[in-house]
Length: 224
Image (cartoon, rainbow, N blue to C red; front, top):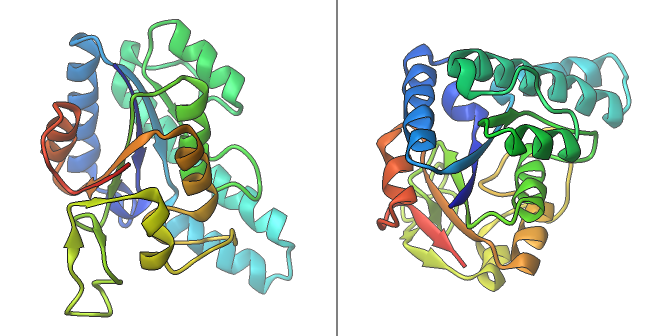
């Protein structure tokens, strides 16, 4: 089974959560031993957004803002790869081709951003498309997808299941911008919808949720 895991920077990197990083590394190695083919895409979290803010204040173009955010996400990806030891790749892929090459060597592939104008959500969706993943798991800072932003609306209701066609009704953003921050970005949704790749959005602060999702258990929100 091929699985792409989109690990939110808001979970492991805002602030850096050493315990969570260690636990995820342990779980990933355990899943690899069981025969799962794994790709992990790590976000840059608050530090990436801070660099975007600094670059913007310095008058840098949005492409340059994105470049800095990508560099931060790759730094976190490198940290994860070091934790995986021999189970991971020796270097962080900077293209889809390099990610596939790492996977073909039987390693867990960990990467951050790839290029300006493309969020790590979109990177995860493109990788999932490229490797014909059975599922994309998004580990985020919420329990799943809600009818509206639960941080602003106390009456928001978590959805156990939602169709790709219904997503625009519950997500605020409809186009990319540097530092976009929502459950899934619009471009990623287009790719995943076109390829009908199942997505499981769950609370990443509970690493055991990853195991439940891989086992097909009902956790978080299923998008299909």
